[in-house]
Length: 164
Length: 154
Image 1 (cartoon, one colour):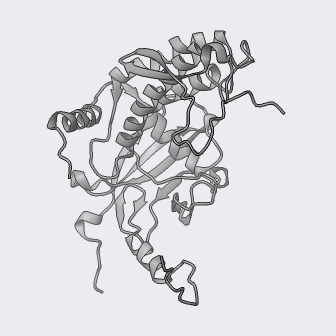
Image 2 (cartoon, helix red, strand yellow):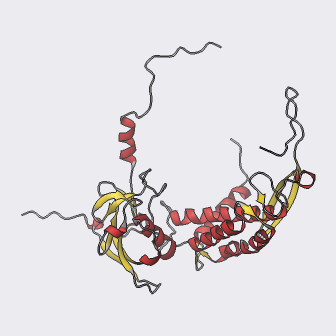
Image 3 (cartoon, one colour):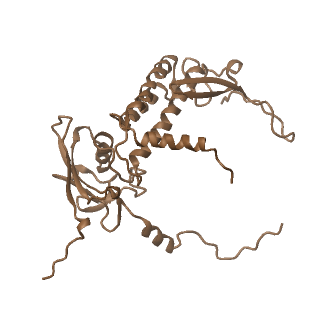
């Protein structure tokens, strides 16, 4: 079996211990509700520049709330309080990158429906979004969409707008 | 007559009383069985005063409200929340039922919530399902073919 670097496993354990021993004054449920409401109202199915701009600011509040989060249950048996807090930590980071990625993609494509940019824009956005989250900053970069197949047996079909 | 008592460490003690902090006029007292084996203490019954003006109709909604707003360490199983999966089976008002289909509006007075009585308790309202899964396996609840299929020759 492959040996893992201790520095890597320590990162995981540090995160676990930090969250388990957090003793702030904000309940996980309070921050989670804020996150849910922000995502639902600012980054829902239909999005606009206005809602996403507000969302980019607003979603950082529950993220920063992590600094003052509390885990009341410290036990290691069926600890749903701890599990929910670890889940929230995962989700809020995901929410941050989702919001920033959506704000930066000024077109509609697939499940990303912008009411102010109702058409897809292959000229500027035929590319994958890559996001790096570092504290409350999200760095957005892009990667080209492959225009080839992995085998010569099938030809390449360029993606195109789906019309009915 | 011989008197049989519960073992000393099974005696249920009076737990904490969480007073209402919302100033609601529509309160319900909810008594919940609590036990955390890691503390080494006896089980206890905590009492929560819950604001019923801002609560869903089912007992599970009350438990969510307690966990989200009063005491996040309250532990219970739940999954589908609409009477299909059976995860939230517990003893409510003296009856074994699912917390997600039991309406608290049917219950007058205080609400008592206990784990299922025939299971060993793991923590709070969570029962040990090891025996259940063993029994379930013993009835072989899967489809079987009645003919042996020859292995395909490659």
